[in-house]
Image (cartoon, rainbow, N blue to C red; front, side, top):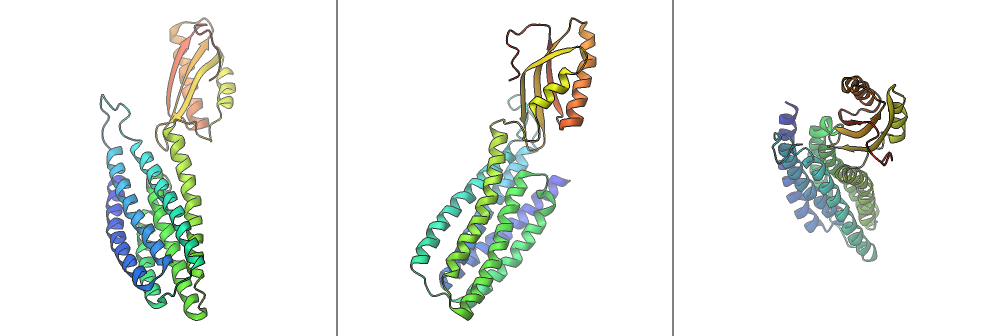
Length: 290
C-alpha cells in the first residue's frame, strides 16, 4: 500500500514539476532573472530526480532471483546517489553563473519574475507535502523531497528578491540569492551523497560499534572470541552481520543456543536483523577482528 501511494505521489509531483520548469524557463528568459532560471534548473533536476526515484522504487519491489539473491533493493540507494550528485553539479554551475552576473548586473522584469516564482512556490509546496510523509524512512524519496524543498526555498527567495529589486533597484540581489540557494542545496546534497556512497561501498553504519559488539559477544559463556567480522547495510534500513565465532569444545547442538543469544543481542542492541555466523574451534590461524 505504501509503495502504491509513493509511486502515485511521485507521478503527480512529476507532472507539476514539468509544468513549473517550462513556465520558469520562459519567465526567466523574458524577465532576465538568473535566480528564476536557477529555480528552473532546480525544477528540471526535480523532474529527473522523480523519474529516477520512481524507477528505483519499482525495481526495489521486484522479487529475488537466482541472479539477484538480495533482489534490487539497492536501486533506491543508487537513485539517491545519482540525485544528490546531479544537484551538486548544478550548484557549482549556478555558482559560476552567479559570479558572472555579479560582475555584470542586468536589468530584470520584476513583475514577471514574481508572478512566475509565485506559481512555482505553490506547486513546489504541494509536491513537497505529497512526499513529506515518505521522506523520513526512505533515502530515495528523501533525496527527491530535498529537491522539492530546495525549490520551495528558491521560489520564496526569488519572490523576496523581486520585491527588493522593484523597490530598491538592487540588481545584485538576484545572483546573491542564487548563491545562497545553491549553498543550502549543496550542503544537504553532500549529506545524502555521503550516506548513499557509504551503503553502496558496504560501509558499517555509524550507529554500530564493532568494538562494542565484540565485547558483548565475547562475554557470552562458551564464546572464546569473534573474528573476521563484516557489518554492512543492504539498503537504508537492513543491517547485515557476519562473523566467525570461536567457541569452547562443545556439541554442535549447543551452538544453536549461543546463536540465538547472539541474534537477540544484535537485534535488540544494534538493530541488526540479518545475522550469519560460522562456529568453529580454533580453526582460523588469524583471530583478527576485521
